[in-house]
Image (cartoon, rainbow, N blue to C red; front, side, top):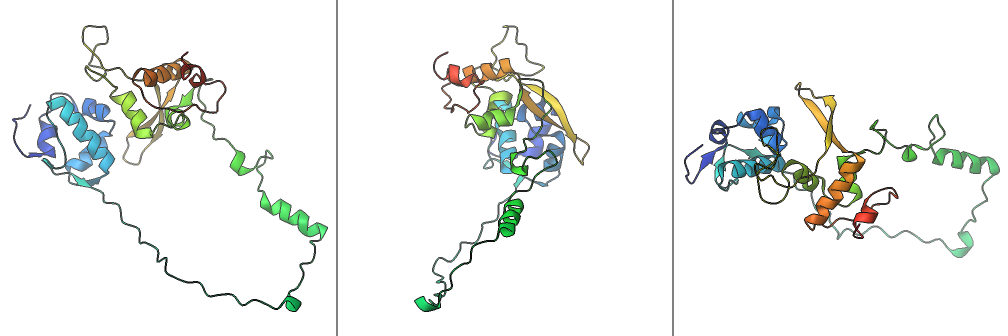
Length: 245
């Protein structure tokens, strides 16, 4: 632990942890490689920095923000130039009525060519815009990001529901027993699989929900008064849970 004072450095907060860095990275949902780069003084996204500071606050029991923690550099988004709305387009010259040419009807060959060029088809005969991305998930499963988007929940919010949970108690994790001996925050259960290996050698994972976990997630939102929308999938539990089932 570290002593209480007005200003802290990101490095001393990392050094003062009584849990492993891998455990801390999992609680914050941030790669260890990203944390290592931040400790070296490289820039990071504001969302990543805020998640780290939030978990620090929970671990140390005091509030940490960019106002009292130094050593963190956030990426500033460039401000897009505002378009000049005062620009007036030149007025087009209008032809006299007797000079207007009538448009000749399209020939059959022209219509056929226009129809063919308007739609690019795949080898299977479906347009590219209609091709659904294959996830190769078990039957009934859905990616966590897709499940959240279908119900109008922001991805970062749903990630917090899985990582941290809501309510009193400790944040769940491999070192936190869930046998009733301690109070654990209510959270959304999920499955996880490897997605790809990044350039820095770390493994990127993606989360998905089984049918039972989707049902449990909807009941989780209902318990905590999280406003969500009903999706268009007729087999989704949201149609039942939203109406009190």
